[in-house]
Amino acid sequence: MRSIGALGKATNTKVETIRYYERIGLLAPPQRTDGNYRTYDDEALARLSFIRRSRDLGFSLDQVRALLSLTDQGTQDCKTVDRIARDHMAEIERKIADLIALRHELSTMIESCCGGSISDCRIIEALSPFD
Amino acid sequence: MRSIGALGKATNTKVETIRYYERIGLLAPPQRTDGNYRTYDDEALARLSFIRRSRDLGFSLDQVRALLSLTDQGTQDCKTVDRIARDHMAEIERKIADLIALRHELSTMIESCCGGSISDCRIIEALSPFD
DNA sequence: CTTGACCCTGTAGTTGCTACAGGGAGCATA
DNA sequence: TATGCTCCCTGTAGCAACTACAGGGTCAAG
Ligand SMILES: [Zn+2]
Ligand SMILES: [Zn+2]
Ligand SMILES: [Zn+2]
Ligand SMILES: [Zn+2]
Image 1 (tube, rainbow over the protein chains, first blue to last red):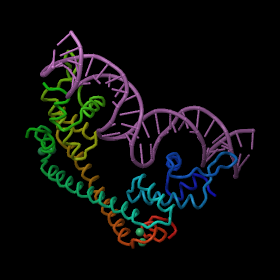
Image 2 (image 1 turned 90 degrees about the vertical axis):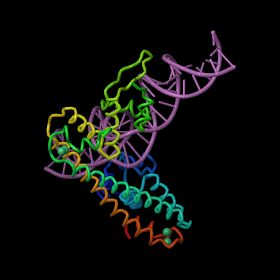
Image 3 (image 1 turned 90 degrees about the horizontal axis):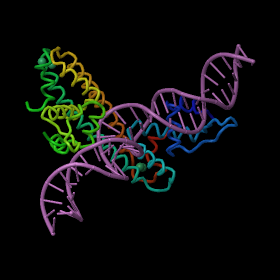
Image 4 (image 1 turned 180 degrees about the horizontal axis):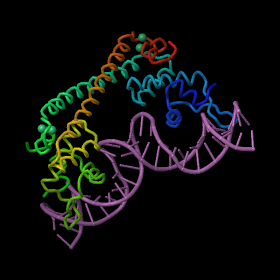
């Protein structure tokens, strides 16, 4: 059994975040000490680690919730898990493509600036309409 | 002179968003008609177009605010503009790198799933601690 | 017995919008 | 004139996923 601060350190999570996860029902309310302090067992540690790892991989809290409930059921086949992961992957691909297009536009813009006065700066010009 | 709806159509911006920009001081409060309707001139159109283009390029509203105030001053040299753009570009590069790393992790994970039961799904396993 | 580190609840802030609710304005049509 | 209809107004609350207090309580060490 460990305190919320210890759990936070073990999972690299702020205390407020852990309380937030509890509030939105992602973590079950843990046992309390006599002094009303939360105490967490190893299962809670595992669950929070799972959440954090999923978050690090960019899954939304709703996706994490779905993954958790699927693992809680346990018996079913993993098609749904697979689909969640693939959907997420597709979104990542889209974001990468968007950002690469953006980078291209930005670099063109930046390279055209000759470092003179704002009135003829190409960056500003590129942002302005009617040019 | 045009109504807020017409301005929105011209700049592909929702009416609520325009009012929001006014509220946070990004757009000046425009003139009003007798019936208390906002009316916008060409300058407002140009300014909102600038804002939208900057937002499309991923600049934050704070960055847009800075760019706008720099163009409003007008006389100065464009070093600051340049720096804002380069900072933004660096952030985009960082995001791209992060997402590509993420994509790699995700694809490894997804490819290891054999489509069986959740209890031995490699995706879940990869998300779980102590493996 | 006091100090300091930790914990508690509850609320409000962040970013960049978006979505109402509950009304008024202005124009066309019957 | 009445009735729609579309647009506009203000003000507030919601979204994601936290983060940051304020104003207290608890607990172990010195
Ligand atoms: Zn230049
Ligand atoms: Zn320049
Ligand atoms: Zn499998
Ligand atoms: Zn699987």
